[in-house]
Each structure stands twice: as C-alpha cells, then as structure tokens.
Image 1 (cartoon, one colour):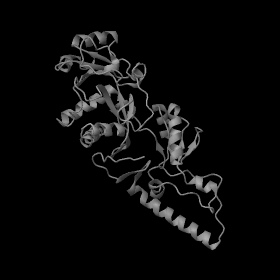
Image 2 (cartoon, rainbow, N blue to C red; image 1 turned 180 degrees about the horizontal axis):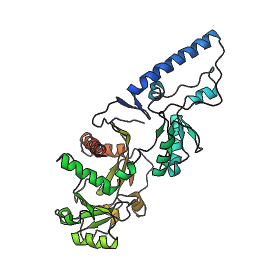
Image 3 (spheres, rainbow, N blue to C red; image 1 turned 45 degrees about the vertical axis):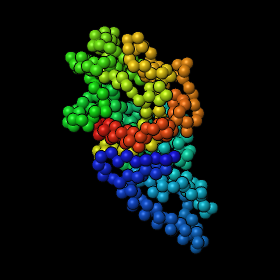
Image 4 (cartoon, rainbow, N blue to C red; image 1 turned 180 degrees about the vertical axis):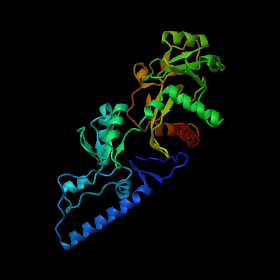
Length: 364
C-alpha cells in the first residue's frame, strides 16, 4: 500500500508517511531512544541467562500514533522471539477501541488485522485510539481523553463541513485571496443570499444541493432563478447551496465522473494533513449530455452518487482494482494510469488535486 505525503502549508512537525502508517519524527525521538534502551536490556538478559521480568496481567495502554516507535511504524513488526512471552508482544501493539465504530467496523477490522493492531470492543476498554462517529460520541470521549490518546474525528469537523457552512468559509477565503479559490464554482447560500440568484445563472444552468442532504437526495439541476424560488417554496426554504453548473466536464469514455480523495487531518492549528495517493473514481451510468430542459431529470447522466448509480441498469460492477477503463467505481490510481495512457498529463492533474486539498484544508 503506497502512500504519499501532502505538506499542506506550514507544518511545525516534520511528517512522514510510510507503509500503512502516519508518523512524526520530532515527537518520536524520545520514545525511540527509550525503546532501544529497553531492547538492549532485554537482549543482555537473554545472553546472560538472567530471568525475564514478569509481565503484569494488566497491560499498559499502547502508545498513540503520535508516540509510537518509528521502528514499529516504518516496517512490518518482526516475528516474536522465543524469549518473549505472548502477553509482552501483545502489549507492544497499538490498541483501538471500536465499540462505537458502527457500520465501518468491518472495514476497520480488516485494517487492524493488516496493521497487526489490537481491537478493543468494550465501551469501557482503554485504548490508544478511540473510533467515534457521532458528535455526541466525540464529546463523550473528549471528557475522559488522556494526553497520549487519539480520537478518530476532530471535534466540530462535521459542522464546518456541511455544505452551507463550508460555502461560507470558501467565500471568506475568496474575498481574502482573490484567484486562489477559483477551483470552486460560483456558489451562493440560500435563503441567505436569495437576492444573488441571477448571478449564478449568468453562464447557463445551476445545481442546487440541500445543506443536510446525502446520497444524491434533494439535488436538482435548474435553468432559472424562478425554478430556484419554486424549489424553495416546496422545500419550505430548506437551507441549501446553489452552484454554477459546469457544462463541459472532463469525461471518461463519454461519461461524467468525479474523484473521491482521502485526506487525514491530524490537526488544524498547526495545520497538518496527509493526502492518500489512492481513492475512488465514480462514473455515471448514462453517457453525458450537456444540460438542456429535456434532460435535466436524467440523474444517471449528471450525478455520480453511488446510491443513485446502483439503481441504473447501466451500472457496471468491477472487482479489478487495476482496471481504470471499466466499472462505475474504479480506483483513483488505475484511473490516472488510464488517463495517462490516453494522453492526459496525469502529473499535472495530481498537482491540481493536491492544490484543491490544500485550499480546502486551509479554508477549514
């Protein structure tokens, strides 16, 4: 699993991204030296025939990702030596509390198995990492969090990532840094900015998305400000964003597609984030047609949401992660290879992806 780094603006810690792991050199130095001393003492006992220290039945909590040894994180853990007891080997592994993981627990367990980390399933079990989903769960874990423990979500992140709130953040950055955020189409918040509806339709059609919507629910492609007003009346002024619709997107085999990229945000102040080199490319089931009044209802041609695409008869399921030319869901890396084979500048595209991720994190 090949990962890559994205040093997003200024980072106070030197971050390195290695196989399956995130590490920080500056915060690891002391722990690494201490662990090396312990290993040397352990080897001296083995060679001298001295009895090994007893392992307590109550294993201490494993170090968090920010304090784990570089030796453990930069390479696969070595096989247990004969002189080490099983409890001692287990105590050195990272522990993750998955009691609140919900629907992602299956995937999380696969990752823990590959990393050789230890899963804790009881709510009260202590661990180095607590996996939370809801804001209430994050708040509850924060009350009892120790300095060496991590939580899977940054408090308040779900709030600022909502469509309306994020649009407000981007607008603020566009005013402060003109031209730096031109990768975001013209966007307004409704009903707050209903007086600016006409400005979004200056180049044609617009797309309306509800603030709390998901899986393609409540998304409409509209042709005029009057259409928006009618939708607002039907939705009882449901908070939404209205964006300029880009009529000439890049296509894959004549189909519209989008890229889902994954960024791990370690902290916001200072800003530290890591960009995964792989992700997903989601492809529409129906061939793309430029928006017109006669095809605005064809969601399978305009929207890439999986929840909508799977209902389409043209949805193509593919299990080949290396095939970037086939499937309604493809790996990001395979898609970039396919585009490069067809003459696209994949390096420049990845640079643009990275710039979008940088700007997004800075806005947060």
